[in-house]
Structure formats: structure tokens, C-alpha cells
Length: 117
Image (cartoon, rainbow, N blue to C red; front, top):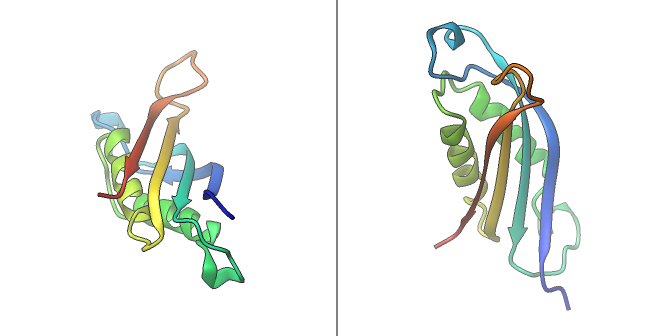
């Protein structure tokens, strides 16, 4: 019996127009995105029985291409909501790193967990 099934993507490189400051507008910045989507237990027999992890990557890229987003938190929240739209999705963890945010730091960012209902 399967108790839990998670599909994930780690370290996805995404270029996004993101940030509050004037110097962050009109240009893209690199983000590193991790997404882990937990699904209702069910046996996966073929790609139609699960969520293709390429779908998670495509959602992150589509969000990045959607236009300027001021906050990394907003990016993470929108991506989480997009991922939870799958009927078998019950929980999602999204971590977004912004490597150029703080000089001298490898990255700064946010991590959130959201559940359906």
C-alpha cells in the first residue's frame, strides 16, 4: 500500500523579472526553484496516473514569463497555488532562492508549504 507519493523538481533555474527596487525592473534575475508536490495515494500506472515533474517545471517557467512580480514570496505563493490545482495534489512545498539578492550570500529567499483545503 502506498502511503504517500511526492513528485519534485530541485534547483530549477528560472529567469524572472522580480524585485521591489527600481534597478530590478525591466530586467530578469536568476532564481533557483524547488517544488515538491504530494499527491493522494494511488498506484501510478503510466504517466497519466501521476503528475509529470516536467509539468511542475513548466508552471515555474510560465509564472516567470508572466510579467514583473515584486516579491519572491508572491512568486512562491502563485506557484504553490498553480501546483495545487491538480486533482490529486494535497500538499506542496515551494522554495525560491534569489542568488543575487544579498552581496556576499549564496542566496536569499523563501520557503512555503501549502495544503489543499
